[in-house]
Length: 241
Image (cartoon, rainbow, N blue to C red; front, side, top):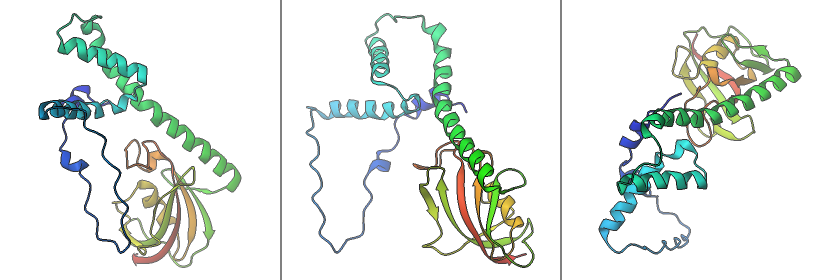
């Protein structure tokens, strides 16, 4: 997975509206007073604009996962460029290596997440003896169903609860009711492959390696790139066989 450093820097000033607090519906209970904002250390709006731009640019350094000492090195490079100071190194030689470092920093946590998923899966398969899902993943039936399974072009309704390998829940249909979807697409590949294995009323647990889940996509604060996903599922209705 590669990202262009230039693209990161060019997108350094996203709309501030995204950071504005969302309006909330009035609540019956009394609201606690919001914490006081930190004292503004700046004297002019121009200074505040400079600070804002620096803050927004720095967001695009997040993929590097900089340490405090590395941040100081970045700051020294910015200072030398802004003040037109002679660079301390041969920039032409090291410029291509910026992308190399960025790629390594992005890939390291993804590989760690994949390793965590593989370790969980190996243990699960050894201890529980689940069925392999065609195309990838594992299915452990906990309640048998009846009748004919849906086809790969069918439409079904299912209850589910999704968790990570550390047990944290990231989604559930419990409060919304069964989820209806087509087995021709629109959900992760692991789901498309497992439901044609199930009969009406069947329940089970599935382990979806990253390759048949979201891959290296970042799907929010809980589902990290490279994550293995676990689901407790129940086939509650075959809308279209």
